[in-house]
Length: 295
Image (cartoon, rainbow, N blue to C red; front, side, top):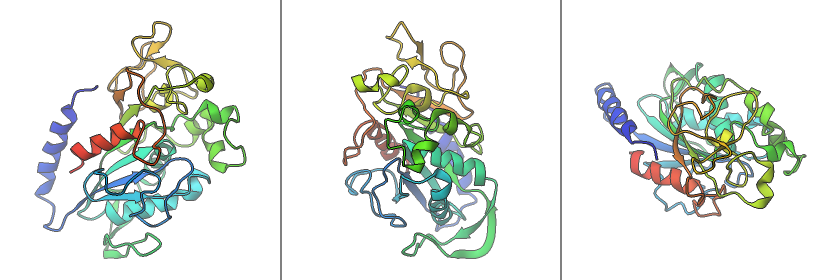
């Protein structure tokens, strides 16, 4: 596991920022689901996709539900609504994402992270939208960092091979070449993506190169750059290049996308891709991290 130096830097930044924050500033933890959705759109209290809402998953947690079926571009307004509600003005956010939620937040930051956003009051209506606070705007959103569990921003070979229903618009986005060309993955607007990569694969995930969590291979969950995926493994595997921790290039020299850092690599091959309605699989590692550091 990567060293926790990020907490020192984070809190130093928070302390400096506190001077400028008013007394009503609030931090929120936003969770963005992946494929298949599960929660009611616009209902930030519905954690159906993840597990029990009683779980500690960071300060003031909110579930940013999208349908997990349609194209990233078509559903992206729901994520922008949530970021506008909770991550503008004097309020700040920690972001946790799973699977295609990685594509969703990366797309949001690249395509809209430099746009003018109205500062909002964090009191959403039934559609998940909030009213303006004072009529002023800011550039992008106040995001501290992003925790990514089983990130699919690099796509999945299961989508390439048709293992998932080809009628789903999202599956076409999840093809490796399409996902990697969907937006500029290097443009995170300076936000660090901490990657949690699972490796509890199965026989039927043989289509996935290197280590995988049954749905996503290390090339994607590790934030490895390039126009196509590659084969990356744990150090114990002598027949495959290592997925390195942190921001360092992989064994073999392939760099990671800018501001993408492997925080957890599943050397014990213990974590698969699935939440199982109980914050399980590789999401369990990201949830524990949010519990500890999203304050």
